[in-house]
Amino acid sequence: MLALATLTKPGPFGTRTIEFGHYYGIFDGDRLVAMTGQRLHVGHYSEISAVCTHPDHLGKGYAALLIQRQLGLICGARQLPFLHVRDDNRRAIALYERLGFEVRSPMNFYFMTRG
Image (cartoon, rainbow, N blue to C red; front, top):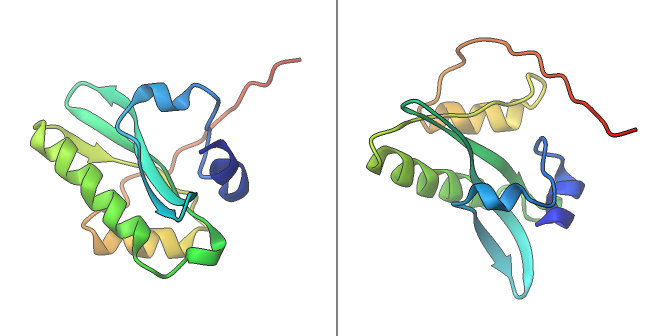
């Protein structure tokens, strides 16, 4: 998971991120080639997180399948799904819009690093 996240840079993903739970992946043999999970749960909202696909496997519909799985879990728990995406990631934005997401608001992110 760390190798795929490091390669694709879906956003913050550390050694303990999986502890947030509900991570699913697609494998090619024993190699993880796509994944997504959940991270933040605030009130009635749940964040879909770490949506990423290995560059060699883009265009196969893996991200859509995994997001639909997350949508089923989140909506089944009577929560509202949300996610964030870089505004220059047109491919992801197009997918999210096809799946029913709408752009709501720009966000600024600040990251602290250990010195």
